[in-house]
Structures are given as C-alpha cells and as structure tokens.
Length: 361
Image (cartoon, rainbow, N blue to C red; front, top):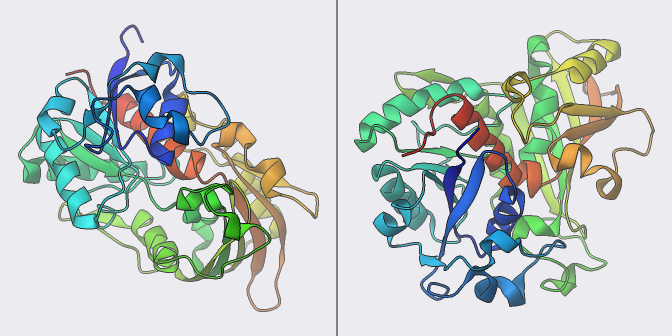
C-alpha cells in the first residue's frame, strides 16, 4: 500500500484512545493525522494532554507527540483532515449517537468503540471473523444518512469476545442454551490499580449493564439482514453473570452449552482448531493467524499467561469437557483492550478497507 489512509482518533486522550494510538504506531495501512478530545484538551499537544495520565506500559509514540489535539465537537474541522475516524469518547449515549452521525454525514466513515449505536438497526456490529456479512447493511445506512461515503460501524462489548468465537465455530451443531460467567479485568472500566486501589484483593459481583449486553449482543451478531435492518437471532438462550476481578487486562469466561445436535469433544476441538474467518482469508495486518487456540493443560488458559496470544488478537479456550446438566463446558479468554476494544476496532477498519468501504477522500 503506497499511501496510508489518514486516521483521526476522537476521544484520543482516554484509555481506549491511548490504545488506538499505540496500535496505530507504524501500522502498514493507517497513519494517525488527527486526535480530538474534549474542549479542555484542545489546543495542547498530545504529549502535553496525556503525559500525566498515560496508562500504557509502552511510551507515547513519537509520531503523535506533537499533534495538536482538536475539539471533538468541531466535526467539520476534524473530518476535513482525515479519511476515517475511530471514536472512543466518554459521553452520554444520545450525545455519542449525535456526534458519530455528524461525522458520518460529512462523508467520513466512523469505526466506533462505543456502545451507543450497537442497536441502531442499520449499523453493523461486527466481530470480523464472525459476521462480516453484516457490512452489507452499510448501503442502507448511507441512504438514511444522506451520504455516499460516510457510515458508522461498531465493535461489540468486550465481554462477549471470550466465548462467542468458540460458540460461533460450533454453529452447525446449533447451540440452544448457554450459561456464561465472565471474570473481567479492571481495564474494562478504563482503570488501573493506581486509579482503583479498592480493587486490590477484591472481587465485585456486579458491572452495570454488562449482563444484558453479554446476553443480547451475541444474538445481534448472529442475526440477519431483513429489509435493510439487522434482526437479531432468536437462539440460543443465553444467561450470564459478569464479575469484576483484580486483574489488569483479560476477560475470562466459564461457559456451559447445550446443542440441538450434540457434537463429540473431538469434533469441537477440530472446529476450533480449523476455524478461519474473513480476516484470515484476506491476511489483514492485525488478524491472528490462529483465531482460536485450545490448551490441553488443565490449568489453562490463564489470564496473565495467555491474554497476549497472537498479539492480544487471538482468543483461547481450555478445560473442554462433558457436563452433567449441559452438553459441554469450557473456559474462554480474550484480551479486553486489544481484541475486545481498540484492537478489534482496528481489525474492523482493516476489513472495511479491504472490502472497499473505506477509501482515501
């Protein structure tokens, strides 16, 4: 690719925004040319705006240090200097919806890390290896927004990435019931242990809104496009509990599942091992070569050991065994700020670029 696409990060000073900055450093296809945030950060260089609150272990990339942060509310101004944006803002839902649509109406594609548009009927919510066909709804969305090039695509909730890929690989056996408990890292709340010392030596058995997302978003991902809208699937029936645990990064899930046609353990392992999606077929830069990795050891996957598998973009599974109430049970793991947040959004953008939805202005 001779010319890199120009990228804006709206909400670039927050934790997810910082992760976008880190992941896009030296990206083969994309170059960060604009960073926008609240009016309070606008006018400062990126280094000045985040130096005292940089949360990542790697240093601020040199290429973005001197970028002057823009006011995210000045949509036309920000959009004029980029080919597309990533959006990761901390605002009220209706404000995010309005902001993202305003960017899209300028003809600028929006790849969103926010939850605001996950249930907008003509906005695709995508795990690239699972439901790339949902990008087809973008044509209808563009018509509604009155633009030939702008649109919004969103990433699903980070908690579901730790078990949905494994269930999707088994779709031929038609899962009917799923029970999942997720054990979620504190970075999912945008915090570390310095920010949140009360999480040390502690577990909090509640994360606001998370269980509804974990139960309903997989059904939208497994849904279909009907009359220019995404209609969620009716099965499987999913129930979840979502728990905050004292871990920096990595969401782990314990999963119980029953099927309409029960597979053997060997069939499940073969499906997981061989599963490839559109990102693997296209060889996208951020795509894991092995999407699902299964560990034979009884004590794996472990959050600290295995969250960074495939540069944090793979998912892992273990402890697959038959169950006395359900057909099978297993453990899943994904990196919540890489696969589950910024990295997942970058992979969506790569897919959109490869499929012709994002182009240079």
